[in-house]
Image (cartoon, rainbow, N blue to C red; front, side, top):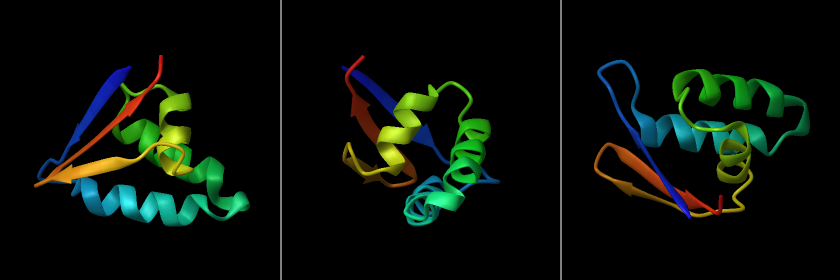
Length: 73
């Protein structure tokens, strides 16, 4: 298992951004744009992990300003 911790910054409120992207990912036509936004914002996270997060295949937790999720490697 690989754990990803996506932390907020002064420019990005991560819990809100992830909730927005999950909502947008529900629409097939919007999926490429949601993957692009999250992938560019969190460049260290592989695309397959982002897809699992946005598709709700894996759960995530919010701890303050940080989103944490795990995926099998």
